Amino acid sequence: MRGRLDGKMGFVTGSGQGIGFGIARVLAREGANVWVNDLAPERAQAAVERIRAEGGQSQAAVGSVLDYDWLNALVNEIVETSGQLDILVNNAVAPSVNVPFAESTP
Figure 1 (cartoon, rainbow, N blue to C red):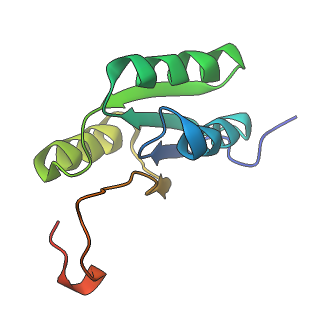
Figure 2: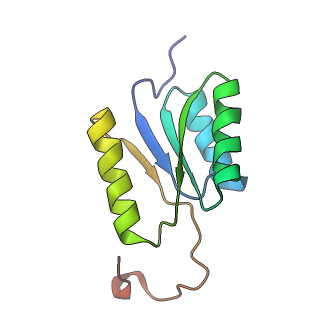
């Protein structure tokens, strides 16, 4: 049986645990190749290993989505290596950022 997301590339920020991991896991179960993001390498790798153990495709992306240069380089890497980025879930929390979206910076 084919998954609804076969052939799609996904990236879920803050997905080493909790709700973000749950989202990444469902995307992978539906056939997407999912990049898991977390600040902690051990959490990102553990999430990737769980997804792979369930038959999914996944890679770890360790870094902060608040670091614009890192994030931009990662998105470029995803697109350059896979040719696409179909799904983006902005799940990561930035606790110190509390401004209206229109006033925010990258």
